[in-house]
Length: 404
Image (cartoon, rainbow, N blue to C red; front, top):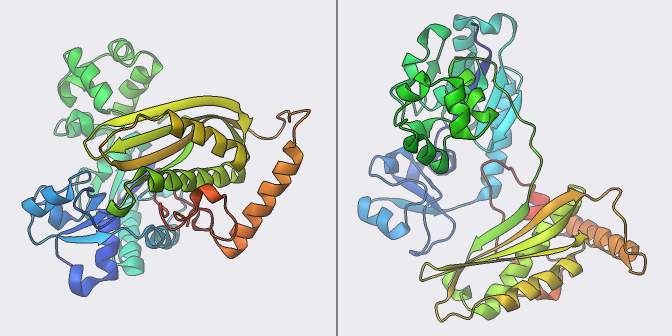
């Protein structure tokens, strides 16, 4: 079985970028990246120096400070991370073609020809690491294996700054030291199902037959996991966008309903712009609210498929009016457009003004694209256009023009 896949995983990407940007103050120091400078928020990234103290993604700021008194909190600068992302892609492509950008900090490459030989594969991995360090002063960990699933797994086995090769002769024994949750595709729900079936470690998982895993997974996913663990070619399911949305943790001075609703409208207008840019319409909307006392509220509505900001704003207002009135202040707002379908070929309302609205939205998008997000916007977002700045979901790299 030959080596077919090489997977690059940038080490503690957001925190490493901040250390590279400010080496005099941050290099070698525990660093946590936060969405805003407030004790009520949590860390969205941590450097390896911070991880050594137990700080990780999701750790609250107050807890992080308790664990590591010397930690430096840096407010996230997503436009900088996107710039580094593209810079690092160019560094990798100077060594080997990129097969897929898996996320903001992960890149998959296909090994072909003589690159499938172990010494050549390790050589190109070393070249990538040198190019990445030279281009951006950050490090990466690389996995090499017979399929992408195993290469991705291997990239996390010697972090930071490691190279791990898994050959057929190494399998499955080399995987036994991993925790079940470290395997791609084994999230909290699947972990619970595996444990309920008596599978509590990777050794037992590897010993299970394809039929047993199919029963646990509830279908062909279990058979694919069985094959992937043994080095069979990965099955990469083509993905279709299921939702478009944004969320925002509110700073303390915006945790009143009258201000939070403006942020919700800002989030919706960003989502509607993205929706139109992708040639989609939405048939549903959800509004998620989180409160400072830890409680949450989730409202959803179906609607006639639309990409019109004004029509979507009316749905948002109806959802907002349905929210429970609570004494506790709002901490987080999220707006998600759901039930997406292609805009092309949809039927417009025979008696409506759909064509005029489409032209209006196109004009607004063009103006905002040229002059910035505050050129034209609906009044519901007034006072919040600087709120909810661009955020990176790790599986999606945003367009700074649309999402600034």
